[in-house]
Image 1: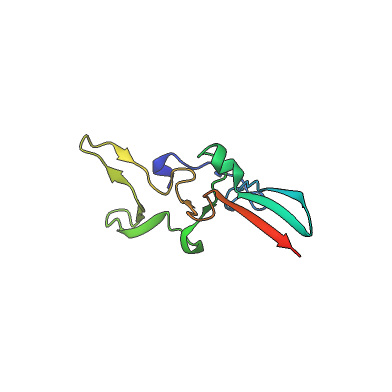
Image 2 (image 1 turned 120 degrees about the horizontal axis):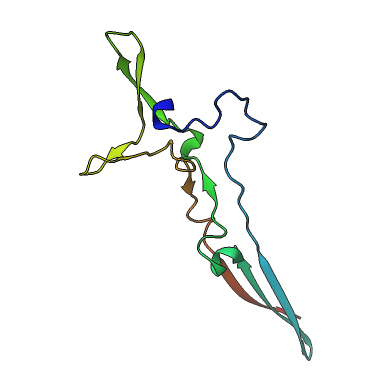
Length: 130
């Protein structure tokens, strides 16, 4: 892991809940309007779920770790000369120029976006009460 240069917790103890999923921010909106109609109580209402995502695609995303499990490194074997274990970063890729792209060890790369909860949704309704 240290060969990737990503070791922010070297020589320190993690704070409580520091290794959890990032916060998600959602804002829901509800508006109701009662109309004066004879003999019938009429109400028109509108709901928008996850209004922040409607404003900008960068807001209102909900992140999660798939199956509540992530494997950033994989054990490959043992070096015959030194006896040290050899690890490989789980999803490291190399392009045609030989440049290494880090996968799950890149900060926040282990998270996926919850597709349904990260969308905005709207509803308009009409309620008639006799």
